[in-house]
Image (tube, rainbow, N blue to C red; front, side, top):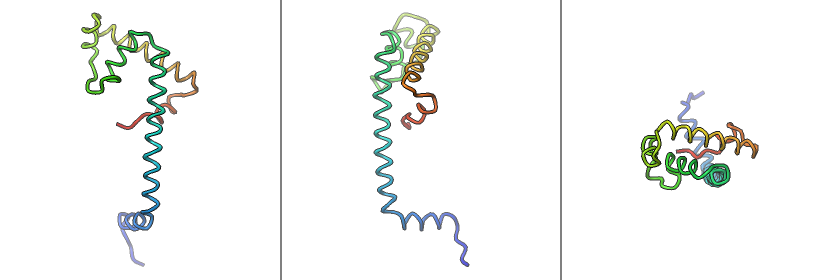
Amino acid sequence: MLELGLSVLATIAIAFLLPGVRLGLARLAQWRADRRQRWSKLLHELIETELNARERRVIALRFGLYDESKMWTLQEIGQRLGVSSQRVRQIEANAFSKLQAGFAAKGIGPEQAMGMLPKS
């Protein structure tokens, strides 16, 4: 019996299944795009409904939610808001707690949320 390496077997399997693989990859890409869109919509909804204006601003600046070209440091945000970086950290932590409670209220725990996160 001819012994083939795993990579050769994988290549043969992929070539044999290529039409199905292409279709599967297209469906997977669409599923990921849909998931990313649902995640984004839910996150923005929770930010708008659960956080006060200052918390929204800190989160938006910190993670580049509205200006994806820049993610601000705690120190930069503090300077902009006229507070210490430690105070920004406290505001951020409070916002995270509120968002976590908002996810929990919608029945989304950490494991489910991690499954919704977009890949960078």
